[in-house]
Length: 238
Image 1 (cartoon, rainbow, N blue to C red):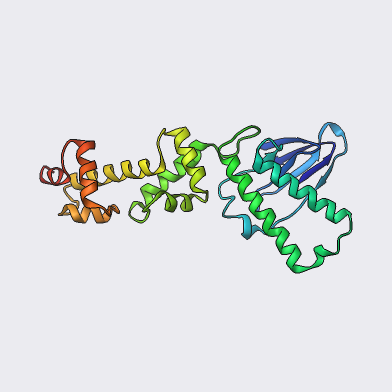
Image 2: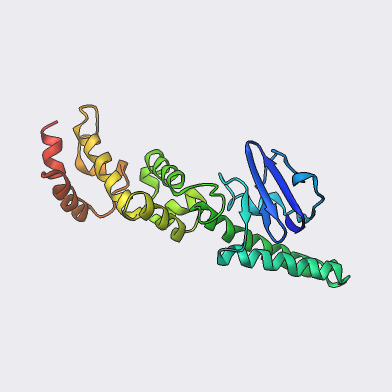
C-alpha cells in the first residue's frame, strides 16, 4: 500500500505501523488479515496493489510487514515503481490492459518486493521485521536438521529463502564469521559426536558420509586443529 495522503495506522496481528504520506507498506502473504485505519480520526488516501501470493511467498517466508520510508535504495526503488504505476493508472494508460505489459509490471514489482524484504531482514532504519539473529537461528536449525545435504552457503541461503549476501551479513552481525565457517564448525562437531558415540559408525569414512564431508584429508586436518587429535583417534578412544 502506498500512502497518498494523511496518516494511517495499520494493524497486522500484534504489530502496529503508523504511516504518513509518501510512505509505503508491504503486507506479507497469507490468511492473516491486515487492517488499515485513519490515525487521529483524520482521513487518509492509500493505493493498494495486490500481488499473486505464490510469486512472493518464497521471498517473504517468515517475514512480517515492512514499513517503507525510502531510506534505503531497495525501499526507494519500490516506492518509485508504485508511484509510476499509479501515474499510469491515473493517466488512463491503455497499455496496462495488455497481458504482456501487466505481466511485466508484476515481475518488476515482485523483484522489488523481494529486494525490500532482504533489506528488512537485517532491520535497518524503521521497524525491523526479522532481525539477523532470527535468520541465523533459522540457518543453524537447517544445518542441524539436514547437515549431509547442505554442501555450501549457497545451499543454505536457498533453504532460508534469502540471498547469499543477506545470509553473510546476518552471520557477520550475529556470529562474527561467515556461513561457510558456521557449516565447517557444525560439521566438525557433528563428526566428533558421531565418532565418540559407541553406537555410532564403525569407520571414519562412514561418519564423514553421514555428515556430508566431501574433502576427507582437508577435513581431517581441520579436525586436528580444532580438537587436537585426528578423527581416527577419536574413534579408537570411544
